[in-house]
Amino acid sequence: MAEVEKQVMVFGMDESEPSFYALEWTLDHLFAPCAPNYPFKLVIVHAKPFPTHAIGLAGPGAGAAEVIPYIEADLKKTAARVAEKAKEICCSKSVTEVSVEIMEGDARNVLCDAVERHHASMLVVGSHGYGAIKRAVLGSVSDYCAHHAHCSVMIVKKPKHKH
Image 1 (tube, rainbow, N blue to C red):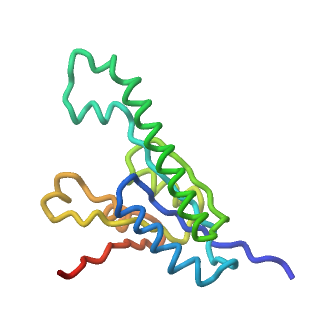
Image 2: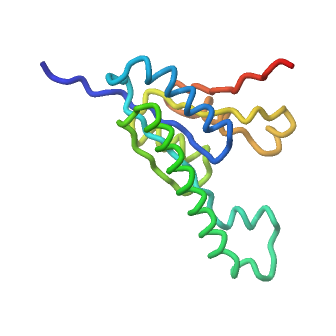
């Protein structure tokens, strides 16, 4: 009997606590109950910003060109930490069929491109829980992906604890 190729799930990962919560939730609810016959091949994607975008937030300065290598090194370290922690979480949940990709660019575009490249049937992202004003100023990766990704999009929100 021929083995059926698994569907691909792209998971958008950043260095935030909501992102790590979303990964654990996803593994617990969509992978653990099916172990070891997961319904998806998991591709974790981290979008590393361009160093010039980080400088743009601080405004143009006379020494901007000199700091780019330091910013680039810091962004690479952050991406490596995110990838390592994501792999550790997957390993702790006994999910071994996973790949981690670090792509450079705006997270919204990187995730939608990853969906297309992998022919993903699902994209999962965490929610930072921004209010309307912060979302309008900063932009919402999950909102953008929900409207532009060519697959189902699941946004995992951390429940608010009642006092």
